Length: 509
Image 1 (cartoon, one colour):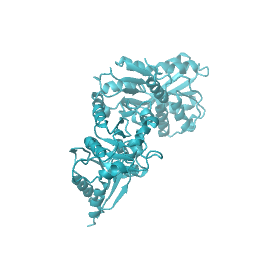
Image 2 (cartoon, rainbow, N blue to C red):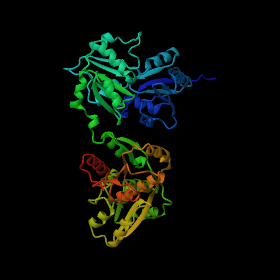
Image 3 (cartoon, rainbow, N blue to C red):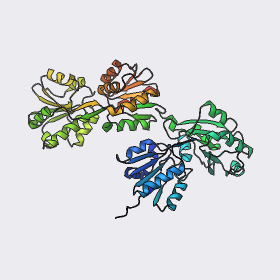
Image 4 (cartoon, helix red, strand yellow):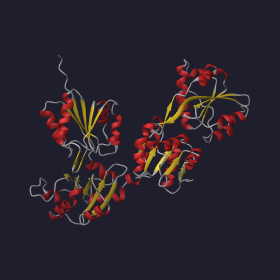
């Protein structure tokens, strides 16, 4: 009998919350792991990088509420490694900065299990940085102390040397100390720290819901209570807190604190989500539509067989380009079959998709709707033959308008859009929380599918951000009162309309 090979454990720091702050090595290991043992402060978005067949073991711990005690967590890690699995222990912040990574590494060493430590950015420096507070500064702080806040400051056998740290270090950062904030303040003042010393509390640092309050040792307990500051939060004590007023940046972003639902299909939603997150928004992706094969390929296959008879192809979306070219290849052709056909593309993204195929785009209308395509067509198309590969359920305005100009138009369904039922339950749960500010819609089909999944939703407190007038009209017909409509019918235009709206310069319907 062949002895089973022992696995390996990686103690990986997930960083402070912003998923982009994980190390390259960390994300690489998440993608390779057989088992991921993750805690409460590791951003769940990081699990998107995991293999579909990876086992996810949640062991999140909040104060006084442990999903698994530390001993059980270590047991799980060791058991999976002994089974020959590659285990990633994913921990918020850094494993060795009050992350109990040292205990886990010690247990692994004693069990003879191979392990590796991947450091992470600790919230002790990241949360202050995102609040506009440098923990060191040439003229304000030459020393830094990172102290556990879990330990009750008044206990007689405290391991914290309050008489040394209170005045011996310029900047003090307490992790997990909100529940003992009053005792921490009393211990610092009792041991010589001035009551007018600035203090900042940063809750959910580096997250889009980050909350920062500022006071002094004399009043910070009261400030925390008035603002409802609860864990997880970082406490920063020292003159560096004064820098926040001048260099705060994260909370000043135009969409900071806004919770936005992105309803685009997952294959095309990344660009919008990333742009919104970069502007400070908290983005929830619930793709309400997905693309599948049309009921049949009869029309498009016939068109492909006689491509040399067409004068123009009009692509109405990047999806249309992708699905048409895929079918073209499936039928044994390639882009050389399009050499003598002129190409029109509605919108810059559609044009970009065409150019990626090393094809020339001959015409892009100034506005990305059917009406503009018809009005601005660059040549007399009377008796011209035009192919429109598109979704099976698209509007009829474009082919009808081109026919009105005398063209012979062939509409070829290359894909169809259906409602993605997998988003139904998580979408309803998010909407029931009543904390959504904006829902983005990039087509009328996303509006219709949104309401198919959540037909009883109360939209009175939400804003619909729509890519253009057709989509906006659809949102209005379904009950949205507050509607933002992009003046340029692109993802970038949609994002700009949101920025303009919240800066007071936007166009609302």
